[in-house]
Image (cartoon, rainbow, N blue to C red):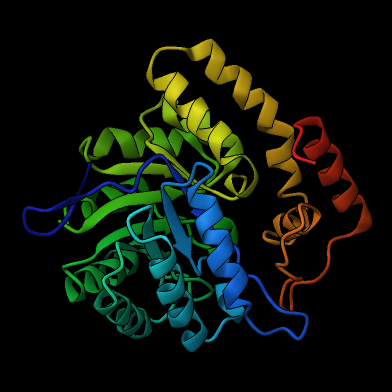
Length: 302
């Protein structure tokens, strides 16, 4: 269980889906498809939905679109899954305002990305997340380290300091550095949850003390991810490894070009009406779609 402010606790679960945002042919948000997809995901292995994160194309959504998505998904999955709002920003004031608004909706948590482009030093990172947490003490916060997109790596020592703040309960770690994850685990209490931000590293990360994954692949294989994690947790390591290896090529194919371009192509192959990505993202190259189709076929998804 993850800590919250006061005496309450919240459990985000093991498989958290970084949900895509469906678009209509004219580029507007397809809220009806978002509602249907969120329900389907909860029925297929998802414990919590991260709405309007990077996979949800938050950089090209308006705040108004984001708040509408929060409310639609929250209503659709009430009682079935937790909803975590992607309300991070590289402006501390903007992140606080967005997170406070999300908190008033009664959402279950907030994903807060390391500020991008302005590259604050470690002390700046600490004070950024501290300010957001203190402004929304009723909301559980997951910090998000993804240096490949932000240009700045949040160090384990900074994470450990943040873990002392009552409502900062978890980290999505997407540095790709398992030594760094080991150091975070070493420096933080066991109730502080570590989630993989890379599908292909879920099992290795769990083996060194992680809890689960904030997943893109769970749009397609959520139940298999749940089985893999459960197998490891119950000592069936060989079975967990088998599932990891079965899903490995799909995980890589989903990141053959910039996320979420491939996963949207995959969902369209399955018959979902999620549309394309918003500019400056673009359609996938033919070879990416063909590789995805092949891997999905091998897993019996098509």
